Amino acid sequence: MSDQPLALVTGAAHRLGKAFVLALARRGYAILLHYRNSELQASRTASQIRTLGMPVFLSQADLTDPKQISSLFALVDKIPHPLKVLVNSAATIPVGDPRTLSAQEWDAAFDLNLRAPFLCAQEAAKRMTNGGLIVNVTDIGAYKTWSRYPSYSVSKAGLEVLTKILARSFAPSIRVNAVAPGLVLQSDLVSTDDWNRLVERIPLKRAASVEEIASAVEFLLANEYITGQTLVIDGGYSLLG
Ligand SMILES: NC(=O)c1ccc[n+]([C@@H]2O[C@H](COP(=O)([O-])OP(=O)(O)OC[C@H]3O[C@@H](n4cnc5c(N)ncnc54)[C@H](OP(=O)(O)O)[C@@H]3O)[C@@H](O)[C@H]2O)c1
Image: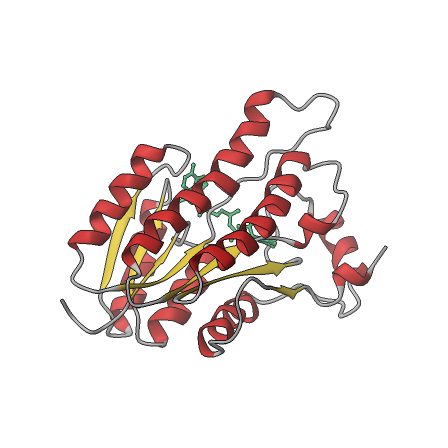
């Protein structure tokens, strides 16, 4: 077993997850890069990590399936680096009016955004025998009444509560925190006009860079006296009514 620590990031092929793995690789971590469908982006991100001189391992899994979470952690056991960091970043955002959202859309958000981080944290904690850090990626939507994304917002609110419960249960050796971004990367769910309108409402008048969100994870790594907390990185968005 190497002394070099391992960081596992879910949903890390591209977008925010990619920024987390690159930041962790720059900090000297070997990387287990999880992806689901984005195989090409995953292999490109893996090449960037190798260019930084860090070992990288890839794992494809549908995290809504508990058996595939078990397989992901069976791979962790084969990797000759001790698991020290887990970042739960993979998520889904079902869009729908609360009056018509289906049970499947409700469950999709909860299975991936809440149950998977819980099961991954459980599996990670078993392996972090000499301490570690778990970071759950939530959203300021956890504190808002976004009626267009009911299951997403409620699942992220649940993830904030889970963060506190796990922080208490896993202390003193393992710390569990959350980062709650506001606007970072536009998705297909929001038109460019709507995105620009949202950005204009933010007190700091811009979206965050992915590096600004990743640096919150780096801060949580560096400050070993923080557990059970959420770092909100939203340019003041949560100050709005
Ligand atoms: N983007 C933002 O502005 C923003 C703002 C606030 C909070 N956040 C939070 O930040 C995190 C990252 O957001 P993002 O926008 O960068 O990512 P994203 O595009 O929403 O997707 C995250 C990842 O989830 C993975 N995923 C989807 N379904 C999956 C499944 N069934 N099993 C396993 N993985 C699955 C996808 O992997 P593949 O691509 O490999 O299929 C994808 O890479 C999320 O937790 C999100 O809620 C984002």
